[in-house]
Image (cartoon, rainbow, N blue to C red; front, side):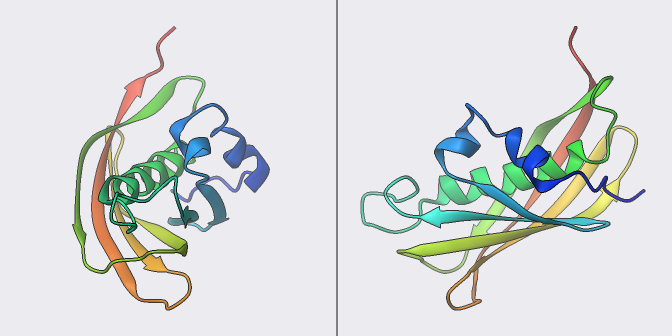
Length: 141
C-alpha cells in the first residue's frame, strides 16, 4: 500500500507546536514507500562540542517514520506510536543541513518498520543510520 500523497504543507503542518517545529524538521518529498525530510545543524541541534547531537538524529529518525506511517493510516481511526528505535552514528556534522530518507521495510496492519539513513546535505556522506518500529494504535477519543 503506497503512502498517501498529501500536500507537503499539510504534512509539515502536523509539526506545529511540537519538537519537530523546534528542531525545524521539514518534510521535502513523499514517495510510494519513502519519505524525505531535512533538519538544520545549528544551535538547536548541537551538543556542547558543536557537533550534531545524536538525540537530534534520533528525533529526525522518529519524526520521519511517524510522518510516513501517518500517510499509511486512516488518522480518524488510528495513529502511529514509535515503540523501538536504534541508530548508529557514523560521522560528525557541525553545520548545514542533514537529510533523512525513511524507507518502508514492513507495512503491516499493526506494525510498521522504517529504515532511515541520514546524510550530510553538503557532502552527501552518511551521518547516521537507524530503524524505527511503529505500532498502529486506535485513536484515543
